[in-house]
Length: 160
Image 1 (cartoon, helix red, strand yellow):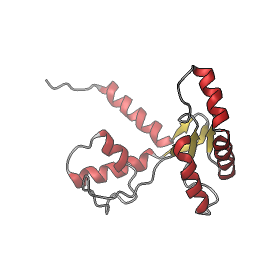
Image 2 (cartoon, rainbow, N blue to C red; image 1 turned 90 degrees about the horizontal axis):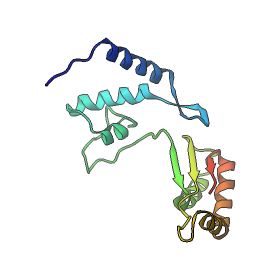
Image 3 (cartoon, one colour; image 1 turned 30 degrees about the vertical axis):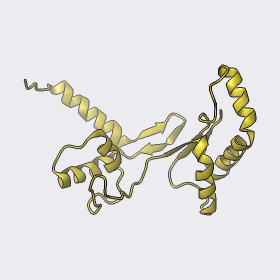
Image 4 (cartoon, rainbow, N blue to C red; image 1 turned 180 degrees about the vertical axis):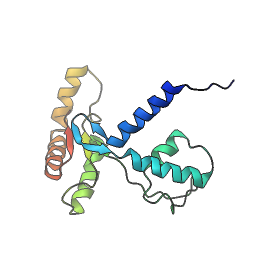
């Protein structure tokens, strides 16, 4: 059964579009970092026209951030996509290697907003407080490195 939407739905969609066009902050803690929804929508229109079919949610997330949606080879499971992510969120367990590689690049700061979240090196064993205290002690050097590297290169740092 087909259902038509009234003018209130149309007004609602228009209001959402205006909101996205004005820019939406990535986080209340980063009001200066806006998501570029206009570029995402533009990319998705190009890709939809090229593929001539609706896109899945995963495809929308990825294809909306393509570097070159007109020229990018798009073959599922085969193509190497060149993406421009909105932000990079790293977890403590893998951020160590990522930060060492970034530091070796000699760049002064990241190209996109980036954060390090220290919550993956906490082992659940004895209870919340005890486990957190143990993780802070055992991983003190790791957390210190990540904290100082984040401060030096302008990344957000979420301590354990």
